[in-house]
Length: 442
Ligand SMILES: Nc1ncnc2c1ncn2[C@@H]1O[C@H](COP(=O)(O)OP(=O)(O)O)[C@@H](O)[C@H]1O
Ligand SMILES: N[C@@H](CC(=O)OP(=O)(O)O)C(=O)O
Image 1 (cartoon, rainbow, N blue to C red):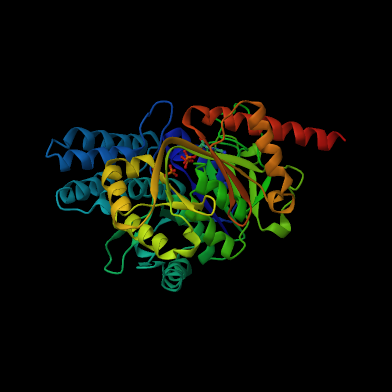
Image 2 (image 1 turned 45 degrees about the vertical axis):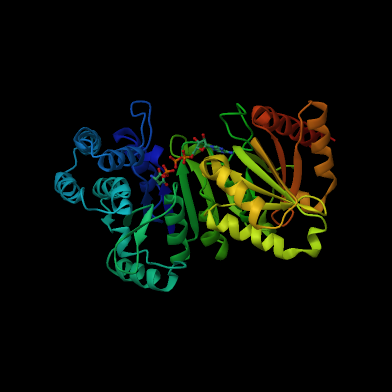
């Protein structure tokens, strides 16, 4: 059995639905279909999920939600009518409208997936199952045992299912929403639950590219990479596969393919375990990064002898509810990396608290920093690669503010100024491709 997840771009309109149907019907093993909410297309500049978020804003601001609700409804009804489907989707829209005022955030934002899956099930002639009746979430994440029991029960009666992505249910039965891009996670969990022979993640690019195609035009495709490499790339920000979607497939070593709904014939990227990976001749497997980081460096003379200071500092970060990664910077210092958007409003209060309650000698803040990571299994085997990349950047006059290697040595991260972000990615890409071409022609 195969689990196939189709992203928002693959279900953006009736034309995309037709492509999905062709793909699904070309392989009888594609029995579990997961869909995102209708996403962007040439004619539709906004994802339904973002329209729902706008709708929620209107409700919070006590403004009239009707125009956005109508826009969402006409998009969904438009797909239904273009496909000549006999589905009373108005009944579902009425229920959502009735619930608007009192419903939870998770319920409202998940309705794009719910409605899109209803249409897809009717179009494919598959059985619709609500994700909240399958994916059970407890406090510490997905409950695999309960979710599997529920899924197998449905599968014993219906062998072809469409399930909305992006949500499941809490213990009390209410909707549990996943992070943005979460349909990838739903598909991956479902693949785990049925021990799928393949998890297919259908999107609008022919696989995972070595670098973001919006930065490096005609970037080389990664033919295969390991779960760990994908995890690192996703963590660093490649949008094509949600970071939390790696674990469920890795746990059961389920081969995972990233494929293009618009060009199924083009092939894609295979994600496999390290012992099956064939992509050993690139010095860098992929490059990813993100802008707008804030680096907060604390210093304390002989910090290694005063670990209680670090403990105090960490508890301050915890109080402000910040997601951080931390890096030792020399004997007496420690740097904490945060996303600017998350830390900006708290910065003055955070700095004051760090200065006055933690027993540190100094605190320094650097903003507008971009992180760029080169990820490769080869980095752990050939440490000199890190030095080579540093050389390329130095030759390009890119000021590297700091470097660290982490993630079981699979990734080396360069901190550069925001303005150098694209240039850094392009430079690492160009040099690693040149090295690769030299190696294969030698
Ligand atoms: N390294 C990369 N390889 C492929 N796509 C990437 C990469 N980095 C960023 N992307 C972007 O991710 C997009 C696909 O993710 P997403 O928009 O979530 O698709 P979907 O709607 O199918 O879920 C691509 O259109 C591409 O612009
Ligand atoms: N619709 C949700 C979940 C999702 O996975 O979407 P997509 O597959 O289009 O990235 C979002 O926009 O975040």
